[in-house]
Image (cartoon, rainbow, N blue to C red):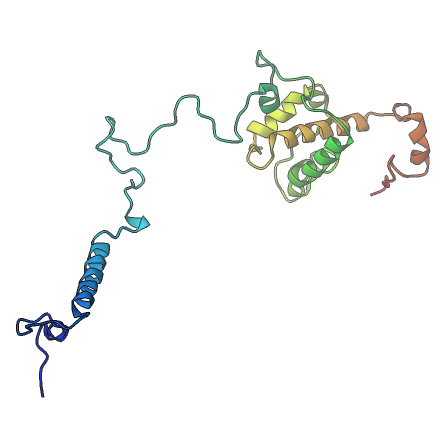
Length: 227
């Protein structure tokens, strides 16, 4: 049984020392083969995948910066996209001197009140109740009862107070800044004012063209008053 020795394949192409005269085309084939092998070798030596790219791990030390921190602080004045708070009244509920606003800094219309009612029923009614009396389902299950919105103290608070409480919390109530967007906080505050006004309203406060709906047992707009 014969054994193949190194370079036998090259000799078969006419590259061995015993070959005196290469046949036509064998030299070109050998040169092509060597070129391919060289390119494969160079490609393997230069390979660098994305996971091998230069980078720092979290909290890794850096020898480049003077403070040795790889994670660099934000450039002064940098604001993340969507977090610009130029309208202080809208985002804080306070005026230039830090006083709570007496007015709502967004247009108050039916759409805002309906949005406020929707958000109130989701986030506020479980504790404060659907009418704001402070007797929500969670309270009926033993949670501490909040103050009714219809007390004189809360009826006389500026509307910015309710925005501030939603934003920062108060007493046993945690803040809802993560759950409720700023404009929705104002929508809730507007709806709270509507609840307070409705508790002490009379028929004379209802526009004349809508009083017929009250007599028929329906709220203006067609909704039933007995829900």
